[in-house]
Length: 388
Image 1 (cartoon, helix red, strand yellow):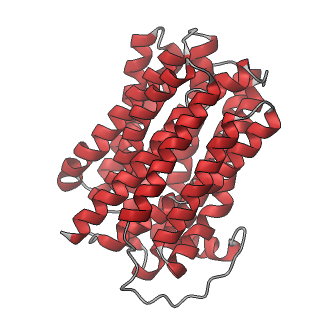
Image 2 (cartoon, rainbow, N blue to C red):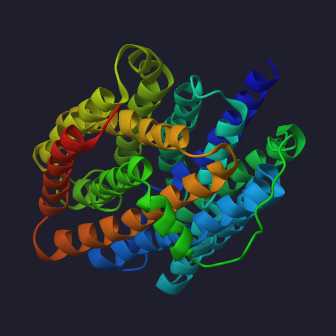
């Protein structure tokens, strides 16, 4: 019962925090374009710099949480997130927007810690369900966050920033009073070293065949998804002429489908099918969804297409970290999952940069089609090389 209570609390903490994150995601590209006059490629940089900070600091936060515990790391990063949203509310220049996203990325470098928290309090048999809760928190945050952001943006973009800060503040207070430490019964022996990026440890993780191949797969999958982080809102704004409110609803639909998949479907299919079959199925849905996005035609068509994509990403984002955690030693969960999240953050850097560049210089179809092609080859790779 204690573990179930802890799972519920970490779920609610992440969900409330992700609502604040979800408020800004659909409106960031249009804010940068309309209010600051940023180009498509500059918007890609705005999206990418968030993930660049995660690339550097995810392993640090993971190792630090192995050393001092999960709770203080989660609390401190939530505080950074609040500060970033407050800066966004007062943003009146491209430079200030970049700074706010850098601090937000630093605050967002706690997903590997949250995954390690789940690993601490679940057995290997229950871990897929536990990781699915994090995915469900993401999904639900992306259901309500974009809808709230679309509503608040009617009253001005600063109001949306204050709204995001308010939700993250609520998550911070909730975590202070309700989130227990998950490492209090473990003896932590490794010496913590503050390194911006630990190449030696990353090489050690990647050199493990069973873990390295999964980290590589996760990197490619996240790259393909990240192609659309900034460009989907640009596509709907510039090609389909959607409003911020329509974009909020579209992102909300995506989040709802992802949450349903990760909270309900993952539990059933993880019991019925092998991890390999689940990964291949998720990749298939991703290929179809990415390839069809430029040809959605209207709001209904695009909603159907992004729902297909959400099914694929909803399957893949919890299952691969679950597979990694099963193969990592118990006292290195935070460190190994932190490396995985760090490299996936690097994919989120390259994805938006390529997406913004190709959208601006090659055509609006290219970010989505290249993502589909890369995912298709990943599907073949997974079929040939993943072992159950």
